[in-house]
Image 1 (cartoon, rainbow, N blue to C red):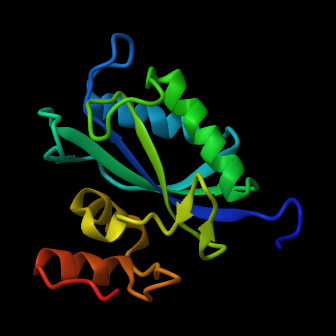
Image 2 (cartoon, rainbow, N blue to C red; image 1 turned 60 degrees about the horizontal axis):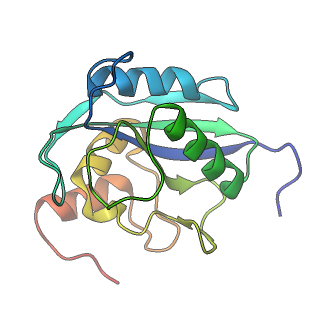
Image 3 (cartoon, rainbow, N blue to C red; image 1 turned 135 degrees about the horizontal axis):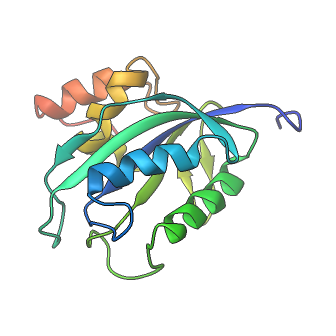
Length: 169
């Protein structure tokens, strides 16, 4: 167990594919989300460029995606609660169908503490290695970060994904 008050570094993925009346386009929402994350209750220490990606599932809208390195004293479960609260502030409704249009999606991808698992959260994120829209922005800021379970770096996972070789399990 970490010392109380110790810092944790997280790789977060951000996505949006809906306009917001006050915040604007999905790209603007990502920028606003970075600003919202910074300082409460942690600090954005690096951020990727915002990229466009095709939707997964039934949604027809293009996504704006980004990634950031986030430094905070929050443990994984407390950070998850904070991220869900921020999503709610941005107008995201809880529940609903997977892969539908959303104002803001915030996911914990990796954590400096290694692996984490409980009924609400798995770190590393269980699907990140299959998602170009997570790996491309993550490579810009954390290409050498290794998955604590599979051992691949972000850069290696992206190479495997883009040349269509299956990932080892």
